[in-house]
Length: 161
Image 1 (tube, one colour):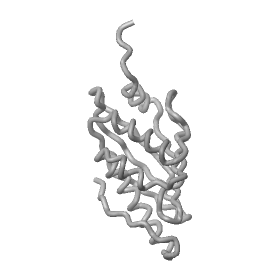
Image 2: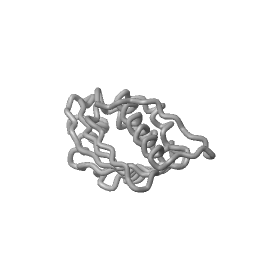
Image 3: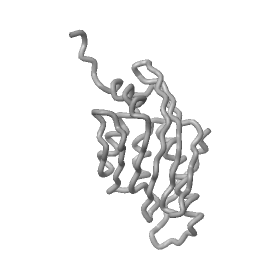
Image 4: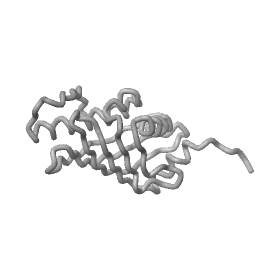
């Protein structure tokens, strides 16, 4: 289960060892998923840099493959979270990389959509952090076929034809 910890951002002139940076970034990711589970995208977006970029290279049709800036990332994630009645991300498997500003991770979203359907997927992402400890670039990979159910749940019903 996720262990949520308070994330503190570092002043640019404060020095940390590579291991301390990795620990800070893993803690940020734990907070990231804890806030999403709570559907608190207003606090979640504070973990992102102002000029962030999110890449979703395998996004299904109708989903952008790139989001730029906090406003776009926030609007997208708010819509994603709104489609869920409840969601959990399973056990986070962080994989700190040689570069202390990068962390790879696996997570396993499971949830119930507002429409009543179950949602299950497996994700892998690479997160790059700026010097303030905020997410600057995120690249997320997932099964696009499973994500299609989420896309359909967000579309308004057109009724019978």
